[in-house]
Image (cartoon, rainbow, N blue to C red; front, side):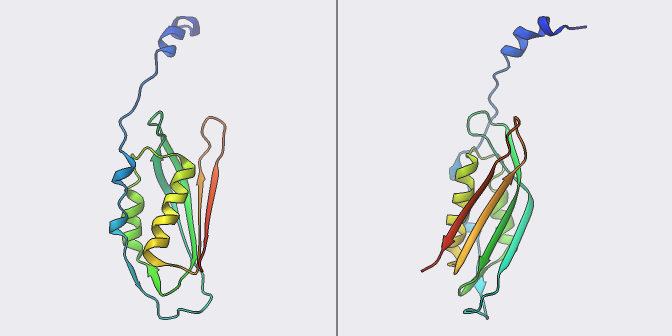
Length: 140
């Protein structure tokens, strides 16, 4: 049976890097939007996903969390299947948590030009730290 002392050297040598994808593989071109028949109103759309994942750009270890997108549509609404494919393109991508939320917001605003939008990424606890990142857009 191995003791803590006998495993200490082996433990210190555990500095593996996992293969990760570059941020360039995130695919906003798959995002689709459709005409919204009720533009000018104040209807709010809330979309949540409890399986968002990307990886730490330094270690390659996965970051898991839940994502909530809230927006008031302008002339367009986000098509949900395309959104799912877009969010899945983050799998395996090395991106810091703060950048992921802002990148998602930027790409979604570009495709649907909402009146306002917020993106909240609530990451699972890792290393004893809990991180929630909120990014907001207010249209003109």
